[in-house]
Length: 387
Image 1 (cartoon, helix red, strand yellow):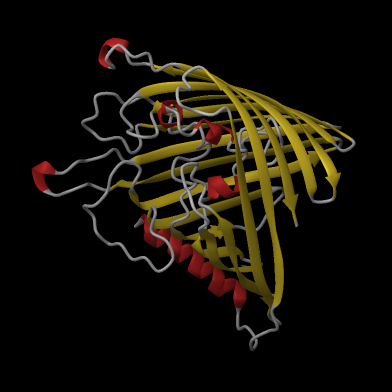
Image 2 (cartoon, rainbow, N blue to C red):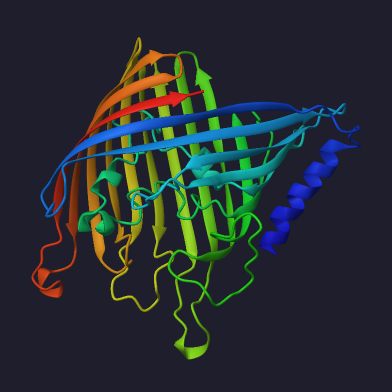
C-alpha cells in the first residue's frame, strides 16, 4: 500500500502537470563539480603503529542535460562521477557514480527517479556549517582516525547526521511539491537499500544490519526571510522493513527502520546559528544482540561571515553501537572550530581543529581488561574547488 501510494502520487502529478509534450527539444548540457585536498595531523591516545599525518582527496564531476518542452515541462537527467566511494579504507584509483537519475519539473512539482540519496540527506538541515566550511561536522574529518580501533568503534551515527538510511543512494523515486509560501514537501520510495542502477534484488532472506526494504521517507523544508532575519527548517521521517539473513528458525532477524531528523537555522547579518537532531532508536540491530544502544546524533553549530572569511564552531554528540560490528555500545563527543578563506570565486582554503572524545559503555571486564575509550586531536587543512 505505502509503495503504491508514493509511486501513484508521483505518476498522477506528472500526468496532470505535463499534458502533451512537444517533439524532442534541444538539450543543454551543464557540466560542474567540485574537488578537495585535505592534509591532517593527528595526536591520538590509542595510536600504536600509526603515523601522525596523512592526505585525502576527492574529485566529483556532475553532468546535467536538460530540455524544455513547449508546454513548459523541463526534463533531463544527472550523473555524478567521483573518485573513490567515501570509504576511508579504500585503496586504488577507482571511479564510481553515486548519482544517476532522470527528472521532470513542472507546475506539478518535481519528480526524480534513479540513483540518488534520500530526502533528508539531500535537503535536511544539519546546522549552518555544511560540507566545505572548516569547523563543520560534514568534512569527513574522522576519516583521519582510520587504521585505529577507534575509527571502527565510532557510533554508527557519528558520520550519519540525518534519517538513518537517507544516505543510501539505492534506486528510488522521489516526488517534491511546488514551493508554497516557503514550504516544500516531499516523499520517496526505495525498494531496497544498496540496490542501485540495473541491480535487481528481490530476495527477502539475504539481509543484515542496516539492510532494509520498502523504504519510505516523507517530510518537508521551510525557508523564508523576515526583514534581516533568515529562517530555514526541515523535518523528515523514514521507515521500512528489515531483511532477514537466512530462513526458518536459523535466520538472523533485525529491527525495522524507524528514523526521524529535524533541523533549523537562523541567520542575522553575518551571524548564523542552528541545530540538528536525528533519532533512529534500534533500527537495523540484530534482535538477539546483547547491547542495543539507542542511535541518535545532536549537532549544534554557529558561524560568522566577514568579508572573505567564515569563522565556524560546532559540537556533535552521537550514540549507538560501533560502526564495524554493531555490537559495542559507544558514544562520541566532537568539538570543532575553524576558519575558511575564499581565495577566489570557487576556490577556498580552511584550517580546522577537532577534538574527538570516544567513550565505550562496556566494562573492561567484558573486553579482556582493555579500556576502549580514546581521545584525539585533529588539525586539518582543507582546500576546495567548486565549478
